[in-house]
Image (cartoon, rainbow, N blue to C red; front, top):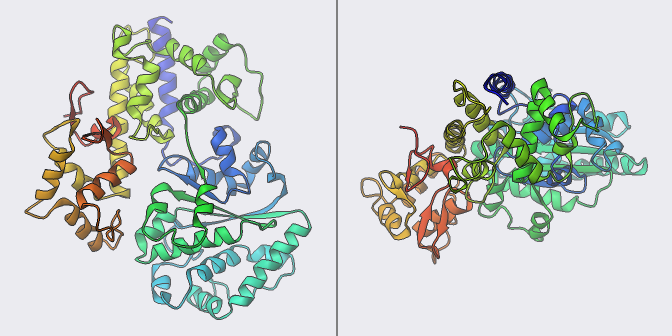
Length: 497
């Protein structure tokens, strides 16, 4: 590829990537990409799906509830041809929406309404039109009536048997006709941020999932952020381990990540399509409209072929020799968190900036090593902003690393945390901040055998923000967080100033 061709293709790809949005929802079949783990997550007999932020929970929730996309899912997921109804209970409904009870309703009823009854009422309301179409009486008042959700939920509390009976009838009716109704639950982390008693509600939902696993006509699908199952007492009910052990985790392998983004670029770039076809032959698949190359959409993408293709648009190494790192492995490694995970959202942010920053005169590569490094910095900045939304207290904890280089002694960090800010130890300060914001402390405060500093350390390690090294004596931080927090690393990529 000469410099003119590289410049043209880079501009084409940058135009495609700049139209991506982190919150993009699938609207057409070419938006849907099926990693093997995600096909299992869509299966009707897997009610609990767990994933990190950006792993695809809301994407698949939207795909499931979008009627126009269901035929595409039916080609891949067993049993979807039996779906006759898909409803959704999402805690991110727009302001003034009456589809779900708001904080005022729930806090007013707290103590008088069992969490399980709340979920049964929400499910019945979502299935109301289907029940009525099948001749099943729904005695619960509609939330759009004058009494609103307060009246509906009070009725549910007083008439639990009638509530359960309606749901039993719709399950029986559907199962006898070989049909399925699916109710999808998503954005439950928003409920956590709004309600002081959200753990009780979440535990009630998970109990409901466990109890209804064997239903044939009525199915549930809950998308849950991974840390929510670690909240104190969420799983404190009999046989909770069965539910968690059977949960599907939304995982992306390195090859999945590359294949997904090459597939997305190919949908909007004829130059990229030509490069793929010239390298691997014309595509033999036609799953729907768009460009589907089997090298990218096969069940287990081939690392060798993906590496070969990347070398056509980027140098093989991050420097002049292999000692500086192979681009294919280096890029993923420096975007990964402490658990070696990269979300599509993170890679997309990195790719956009890498294309932008690789615009150099006379370059014969679409992507340059310096541009890829800038892409990692941009992705880190974006990930840290997300982290502030999900875990506001992390910045307080990581302030201990300011003006220090990683890896760093565990004892040194414990010492900084014990001094804290204005004489208040950092773990206690975080606990006070959580109390002030009406959210749960991210570790078990009832554990008296473990020091608060160790509990804070273990929480950060569990979230993938820190890494323990050298027999747990030193703490390191993956670049996807380190660069965004402007923390130095000996011999590592330097943060932006």
